[in-house]
Amino acid sequence: MTELLTAHQMHALEKAAIESSAVSGLALMERAGQGVIEAMMAEWPELSQRGHTAVVFCGPGNNGGDGFVIARLLGEAGWNVRVHFAGDRPKRSAEARIMHGKCSAMVEIAPLTVEAVVNGARPDVILDAVFGIGLTRPLSDGLAQALDVKAMHVWKERHKIRRVAVDCPSGLNLDNGMIPTDLQALAATDTVWPAYLNAADLTVTFHSPKPGHYLGLGPTLCGKLAVVDIGLQTDAQERCMVGQPPDAERARLVEPVFMGQPLRPKMWLGAVMGKPGVAGHKYDFGHVAVFAGGVGRGGAARLAARAALRAGAGLVTVICPPAALIENACQLTAIMLRALKPDQPLHEVADDRVNSFCLGPGMGVSARTRALVLETLTRRASERDWRDPVVVLDADALTSFAQDPETLFAQTHARTILTPHDGEFARLFPDLGTSARGDMSKLDAVRLAAERAGCLVLLKGVDTVIAEPGGGASIHAAAYERTAPWLATAGAGDVLAGLIAGLAAAHTSGDLFNVAELAAYLHVELARSFGPGLTAEDLPEEIPKVFRALGL
Image (cartoon, rainbow, N blue to C red; front, side, top):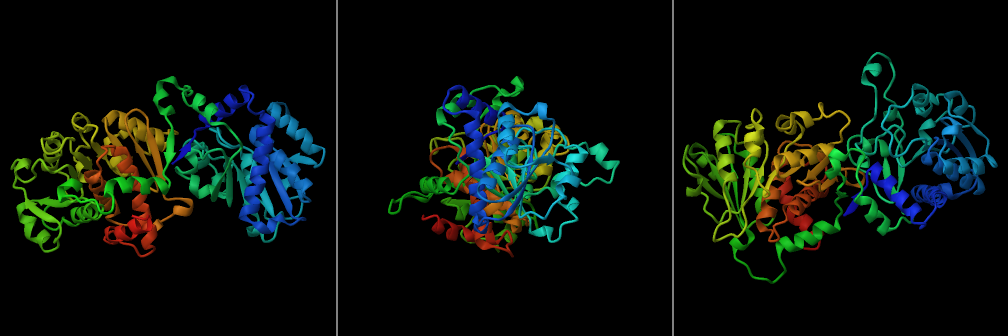
């Protein structure tokens, strides 16, 4: 797992390290500047030759100080370097002022304007060190135009220019992955949203990625992402992580955020799937019940059921209305099938050995769906299973409570996980939906939703966020080297719900958060393994191949 730090946490970490005398601010800048150059050379080895040209944009803060270091080091390495400074000289940070002086002794520093930037030959590299972490305001019009590559119209073959961002492309908020913009002013002009044009080919950040590298527009604007170690100590990090964020009322949101990595899924899958050669009864690996809709609406449930079975559940049963029995029987073999009559008690078709339920895919938005969800949520541990059953609620199981989400939240418990997409999320949490939350990040919105619902919430998307009550959160983004755009296909979400239910049924530790993380990770790995042309039906069948690739 990789820990992600917010701007507040990163600043606190640096401050703690400096105050402990472990390192100076100037030393951190030197390490950062050198790290950017090394990452740039690793990405484009041909740039290691002397004689290349760089244009470096520097701002008044520490990000600009890093830029001055980069410019100086490239100059010492034989590059032709031009530096453009944005901001007021008196507002420079103390460290940036010193680095500005060292740089100006070697390189002439011009203002950062369109006219000044294009007054020279086309560079091989443009480095953006104007604003890094912590920017929450829109860029000024003049600065936005200067950063706009299309403004460099006098340069031929400007598509050959490599763009490197220090921490992030200027204009991107690294806490939420959004672009701070005055939307009303934008609508009244012909201005193009600057950060779309300010996208980098390579972004180099320090010590740890930030949430905005993975949320929202972050992956689109950052290009490739490299993380440079600048020697910040773990003990300083532990001290800063217990500090309060700027808004004390949101103190719980200071909890660490993690980005899933391949080694952790392998470890958890080993625990779920058991050791080779160890005997076990099918019920030892759990029994999943998946609820299906009526006639002609069973496909989503069958997808979820197939994923649950492939994920390791010992048994999977599809529960459907009597009229849909024959239709489902024609398409299910290893998966069992039971009919549930209207008003029939659930325990008559799902005994106490069912330890994982999946409700929602294809069930229909109805009073009957509401009743089944609430009845399932009342199930508790039995003599044959020491744990409360897991209840995965997706799709129609969520939308059925859109008019009265508090009724749902009154029954959800620690073994419940909600798996909405953006639309379903907005129906349950109207004030936290994309159009209503303003500059609040998706990460913070899901954390607040988990607190309100009293259970895990997995908000699906390219930048999937998982959160639990108390503030723990994880981001699983299909970004950078893990892109899988073909995963955006009908039924993929149903497969994810089934994956969670199947893994949870077989998982003996009871840690549902880790199960959700694992399922989100595997979901993308399945798509990447199959490749373009994927349909949702392909995902469950790819599970054995991915398991083998993980060494299971």
